[in-house]
Structure formats: C-alpha cells, structure tokens
Length: 137
Image (cartoon, rainbow, N blue to C red):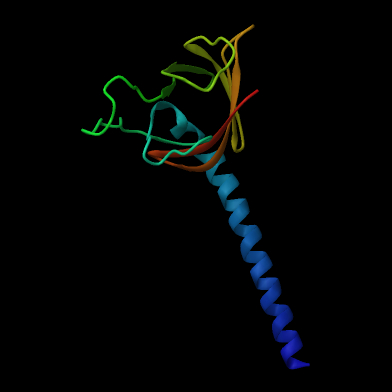
C-alpha cells in the first residue's frame, strides 16, 4: 500500500510540474510582448523548413554562402505595424509593410487587402531569440 501511495504522489508531482511549465511559457510570451518590437533577422543555420529562427543581430554571410541570396528580416515597428525584407513565405502578392496582431503564442501578419497573410506560432521567445513555425493563411 505504501508503494502505491508513493507512486500516486510521484505521478501527481510530475503532472503538476508539467502544467506549471506550460503556464510559465505562455505567461513569459505575454510578458515579453514589448520585447518583440524591433528588428529580427533570419538565422539560416538554425532555421529548417517552416521552422524559422530570428535573432536580434543580423546574420553575417560566410565564404560558403551565396552572395546573391539575402535572408529575411522583419521589423515590428510598434504594437501593430511591421516592415519586412526578402520575405519568401507568400505565394500571393504581398507588400513590404502591414499590420500584425499578437495573441498569446501567435503572431498574425496581414499584408493588406488582396495580399497574403502569415501566422507565426511562437515556439521559443527570448530577448534576442525568436523561434516560430510559419504558415501562409
């Protein structure tokens, strides 16, 4: 009987720990929204497919990089406006500016009427590191 009680307590502790971590991640994103404002540069060596990593510092081309290829950049100007460079995640037309909304772990980019829109699901967000999954809406 003692082993059963011990196992139950251990299981409850693990469940509580996991749910607390999930709540912390969501609250960290919510509290750091103001840190989203500013320039974010694609980090190509850390990005893969639809999972993108952006850093607060610009990626410097190496000798093995093609000089003709530019990596994406996004500038969250204020709480609602953004500007982009070298964006390749739209099949529809897009503009270089637009508006965005940020709700919890989702950033929705709207390039305007008749243009594309993207959603960025935040996987990790720190002062100088933004990892997202991108999807065209």
